[in-house]
Image: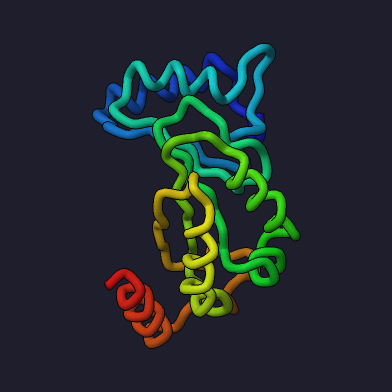
Length: 171
């Protein structure tokens, strides 16, 4: 099946998570908005899951429409245009356009701090302040997953500096 899960297995997985006591369901990717199985789309899974979970969310790269029945949509944005485009295949303009077009009531940015982008955070937050749909930003530290991206990993000292910087912006 590769990266695709058919509708019946997706429903079974949703029920298995509910039975295990999971309070929140987050659809992630690849790009979850691209999921289809026959007539079913991701939004069909979202509608189904909302009957079972307190919160249903989607984490997306933001390159397609962000409109959904999910409670929350997290959009990965990894810096200003030049930085994001280098890290994420020239997608900044599409992402920013979708952020400006969406009517979803709870859109959050998901920013993964790495060695190359963490200093962009303040300017990115200022820019995002001009986008009415964006309600906030969550921050994560980059961790390598063994596919040649180790140079992006922050050293322990850089992690401390980046975190102190982000905390300073919050204050």
